[in-house]
Image (cartoon, rainbow over all chains, first blue to last red; front, top):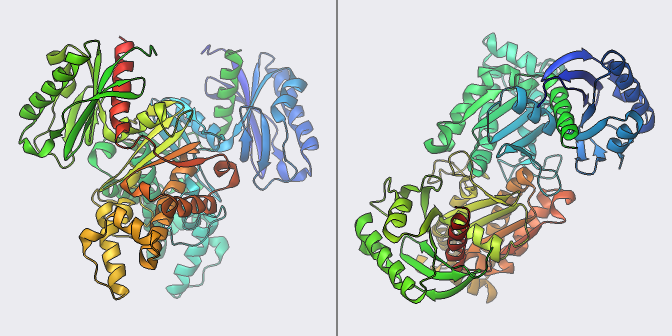
Length: 314
Length: 314
């Protein structure tokens, strides 16, 4: 790729929308942050996005493409948003055509987890991987796959949803109707609720607001056995879901991102041990299980990169 | 592909080795069946295979390639067998080079589940599928993937092992160290043992030899509630493992083969219902879950087809 080329990457979240001008995986300038929830419909939000794009182009007139990653079911082939998670008013919106028409730029839209995986693969933790599983731990548990050196999307472009795979088929129903699914074990809300219950069983009342992944990380590092035990459990559960994906896909890199992943060895040690215990040497000896390195920039970089590639292939 | 072309496909099983001349997915002539267990080492067995190949070439001198599918860890890229399941004396055997040198034909070797999947995809139940999961139910539970219209192998060529994915992470240890794995629920030996226990709990002593998949199918069709209940359980368990693979890969076709799959609706009804319950409409509404149609010939056809494609690309 011509490394002089620039695109705008936009990370459309349920709370805020962040953007930047990207050049060879580097952020050159940030756009103004948009408050997603201030908009009641897609029309006014799109107008604000167009304003941010226009402002970035003033200082970087050579920008040739724009890519937007969104949380939900996104038809990246036809450029249509079917629906968004936790954002109302986005049903069947042809965002790609709107952006292309209004800006004159090449535009792409993509599912946010897939865009983040693409960023980590092109410029981050999964660089040089050929078969990569990316998992993002937050309120939801998202995922995406790079297979044979390409973003793998599946028949309805919905592949990669490891958060909805079950590790306990007799377990409790999850949000997408798959009882015992990973998200029901390690989604942020579930982690907080489990922590409250474990503390209570140990004779302590800890408010749920003080059981964020960050709080529990600090508590475990400070020697709190309840928090340490919960990280161990989370690591085993995540390791079991990953072991399933590993038996199926035999990847060479697994990237774990999101707030929970910042817990470092508290999480990664039991994850790696569980994967080793539950797979064979042939498939885990050369497997790297690593934290994401691009953080919140992964989506912006991934979207900009996908947009530049789309522009280049025209 | 030139439909005049012919290759020999060989299905190397733990009990017998079957072969045939294949032309455009059709079997033209069978080779003599080899008794796998009569041979104590790979050398003498390879000699007998070479004899079968030579005999088939007498009647079909235009044969240009030979493909062998084997049960175990097969390095299809380098043509080396690492080890075989239930067949002793096959450690690090460079079978592809031996066959090519001794016959002068283009030769390929492949894992048996992958070769069967390839046969079902090119000429059988998964024809026209773009993203296909194949699962074979027997003593072991094998699997293979066609993704983006290609046989997907993974980093160590070991992808597709859905039989070792867990559906119950607190479950009993499986043969490959993944507790609660699918094979530990629906492998033939486990099905027989579960049937014996269920009959006993119902006050009946049924010998384990009378609890084959075929026996249990007949019993369920004859109105036996124990057998019918067991098929229901097996269908749910298999459906759970498939739902996990579906969330991850969003396929358009799933092919179920092997002895257990012959039970028809006894198995497919609970499998399909479970997949619907545990996934979303977007990803199951256009998904076909179908029985394999090529039976024991799938491996022979798949191996011959892979061999012809290798010959064509030289």
